[in-house]
Amino acid sequence: MKIGIACYPTFGGSGVVATELGHELAVRGHDVHFISYALPSRLNLFAERVSYHEVTVPTYPLFNYPPYDLALATRIVDVALHEGLDIIHAHYALPHAISAHLAQEMLLPRRLAVVTTLHGTDVTIVGQDRSYLPITRFGIERSDAVTAVSEYLARVTREVFDPAKEIDVVPNFIDPVRWKPDGGQRGTTCFARGGERLLLHVSNFRPVKRVVDVVEVFDRVRREVPSRLLMIGDGPDRPAAEALCREKGIAGLVHFLGNTPAVQEVMPAADLYVLTTDMESFGLSALEAQASGVPVLGYRAGGLPEVIESGTTGFLREVGDIDGLAADGIALLKDERAWGAASQAARDRAVSLFAADAIVGRYLAIYERVLAEPVAGLGG
Image (cartoon, rainbow, N blue to C red; front, side):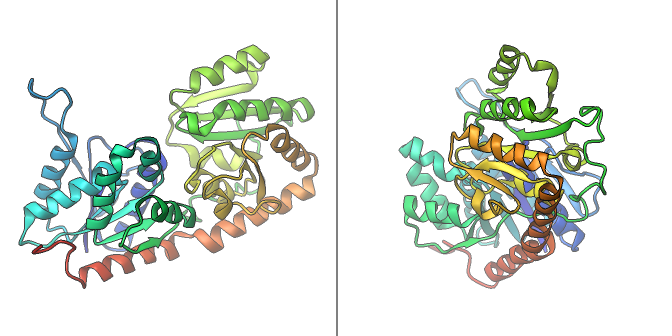
């Protein structure tokens, strides 16, 4: 099968999931072609059967804003014709599903199936700006298949758009071989010293991630348990988090690494993973933490309860309950037996429910299904 993947190339969850899916598909013998305006952050160009096609957006004085959606559609058509694509898998509704549908129409009567995966803000953004509702609904309706990464997101999509289209829930996944505990060497990094515990957070530092809450949780934990905090990622709220660290006098205990692709090397060394987002459609980083044997502290929001079993693989509290999360973290760090049980349960849950083999197989079944049916909108 020849599969095109249109995605954002950033460190956000949708781009990461798209990239990991492409790698898994290539390992299984499928030709995968990534189409984006920049190289996806985790893409391995040296992997067999993986190709990257850059979208170049022309600039004309006539345009106040470069028409990326049109450039993407044109590039999809070019790749489909010259590489013989069977399917274009659009990750994130806007603009990828719309550009994919436009490419589909441009290619008629040649056949190109379109599968769209909804990741979260492509749906919830409609709640912030209703002007996007008609075009997002159009992209969903015209796709041959639509998937959502959690039951929560599928429910929200139905509530917001009331689509006639069936929505398949296909959760995010991990490779248990790549994401795994470090064999008892946790804490052995250049960041945690002399018995200090290590807390970790990874995100794009947008307001929804509430990174200031992460710092607040850590500040409470380190007063009871000698600890350090590692912050991976970058974004608009990083300055606020850095300022709070200086204000509290803990800047020397908090390390901001910026965007780094080496998360899987750092994750197993952490003792706790902290994810204080107030709207998480799934929580891929929390899944990666659990696969690495790291218990998770988070808020009971969005799809996160589908990933974390509170009281077993970590703890969930209501949004804003910083004191509660800190107390949960302190209790785990002070009880080695309880931490060990949570660590093992986290690993077991990640492997049993979210291993790549099972999840990628569900995507392949969807591809095969749509290829056996008429393309949505063909001839109409």
